[in-house]
Length: 229
Image 1 (spheres, rainbow, N blue to C red):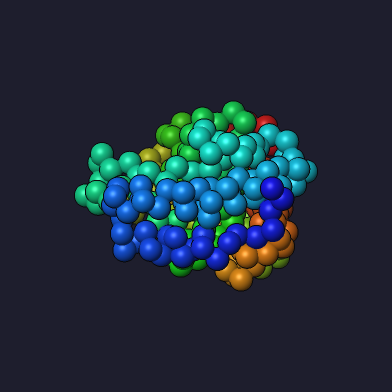
Image 2: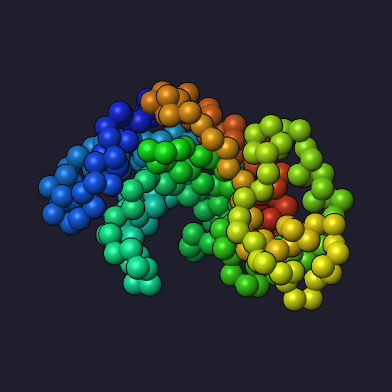
């Protein structure tokens, strides 16, 4: 179906899931989950596909509910103290065609009851990719500065997101002009979008605009990790 906006029950479902994060409640509400969450997200992904292709042909918009661009709702609780089985938000990652997991370069859509954000980057990339990004920032400071001081970037994102190391990474000058960025463990930008927009077809335009604004930094990151943009 063409995407006309998320249904109101999309966020109501997650609000109720927060209070009933257990398998019994989820199994009882599985048809609702499919109708109010999975199918609208799949419609969104399908309609974003041609827009994404104009931004870069190397990122994939796959509406399949299993193995596609939709994040699984099931939490990995193996190493977590929080054993609740389900995520309480929806999410989409338009992953690079050469990427195999969530740590690959990608454009991201976060849909929670608290906030909606759209952006892109690399979240906790593996050590070899992280080193390449740091080396690219170190070796091309003027290019990096140009990206971060671009008026469109500042207006849309304000700043780069991602946790940092407490100390400079080994082998990097602690006095480097961008040492705070060299400390980063993730490189990500995201822009907030009002929930009222998510109920409309125009959410496609809002998401596309955020991804277009993220395009320059995505190009830099892809080049750093040696994948085409």
